[in-house]
Length: 295
Image (cartoon, rainbow, N blue to C red; front, top):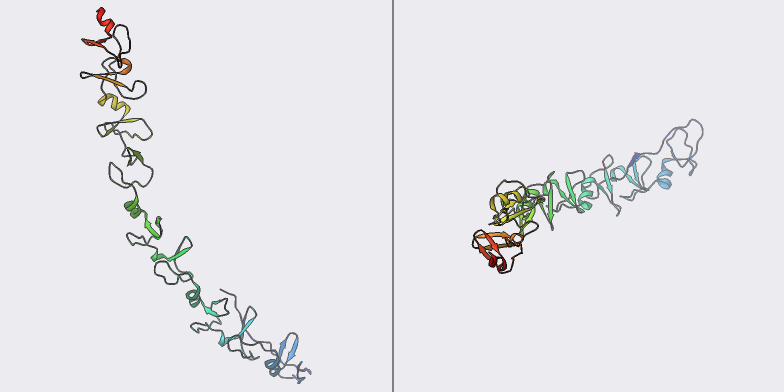
C-alpha cells in the first residue's frame, strides 16, 4: 500500500505585538493566522491565495479543514474515499492506482488482483493461495484433477494444464509392474519389454533380488546363476557340469536325450572336436570315424 500522510492543518497562533498578514497587511494581533512557507497569512488570504486544491472535489482546502496529501496530491479529509465503494480512507490502508484513483484494499485487489485459475475470482492480498508457473489459485481451489481433493502440502505432478496428486498420478500414468501389477513410482527394471519393481524381480527359487546381477530365464521364470545351475540347467554328458549358457561354451550339442557343451563334444580317444562333424557313439562315449575304426 502507498504511504499516507495526514490529516493535518496549518499552524494557528495569537500575537501580543503588531503582526500583519503578508498579503493584505491586516493586523493579526489577537487573531488566527496561518504560517505558510515562513509567511504569516490571515485565514481569508490563505484560502484565496495559498490553499491546496482537493484532488477529488477540486475546491480549496481551507485553513480550518483537515488535509491529507500523498505524492504531491491533496484531499479534504472527507474527500479521501475509495473511488469504488466510497469508504473513508483517512485512517485506513489504501491503494493508489496508476490512473490516479484511490481505492481501499479490497476494491484495489478486485480491480487489479490476480484471479484464481480454479474459480476465476480475485485472490485477495494476504489470503492463503498457491502460485505455480506464474499462475495463482486459492488454496482450496488448487485441486487434483482426478480425485478433486485440495493438494495443500502434498506433492503433485502436472500433466499439461492439469494437476494430479501423487497417488492419482501413479494410478493413472505410472507403469504397472509385470509381476504384482502395482504402479512403479521410482526406479524399476525393464526385462523383455516389461517393467518390474526391483523388489519383484527375484529368483524363482531362492527369491534373491536379481537387480544388478546376472540371471537367466527358463519357461517364463527367472533364476539367479546358482539356482539355475543347481535346479534347472541340463548336465553336460561329457564333463557332468551344468550347461548354463554363461561365458565360454554357450553352444550346446544335443543327441538322443543327451547334451554336451560344444567344447566337451570331443572324440574320447584323440580329443578331436566333433561339433558339426560326423561321429560314432559307442556306449557312453563318442569317437571320430578314424578312431572308431581302430577300436
